[in-house]
Length: 86
Image (tube, rainbow, N blue to C red; front, side, top):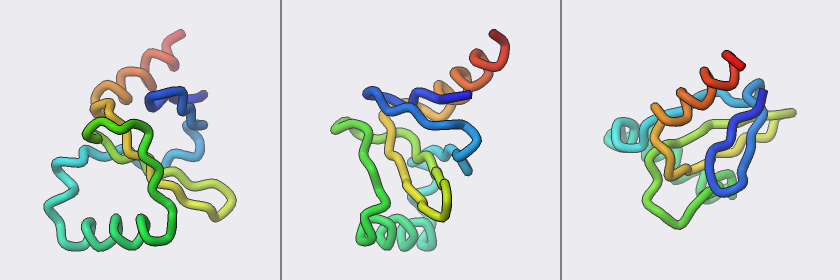
């Protein structure tokens, strides 16, 4: 199955490690450091120019990417479940 995370970006669900709410995770010192290091290494991919609502952690063949999406985690979750019920 595939998940559309916004602006024509589609990810294979098998490669998604987690979907997180930006507001909830951005308060942690460790998360801020993780995001900063990921940004410096070129792993962060903004899906939109809008303010991101979710962070999607993706990994395949040892390559990690962090997608910043304008869609809320609840919206992405609904898309996952809807795809499973078809």
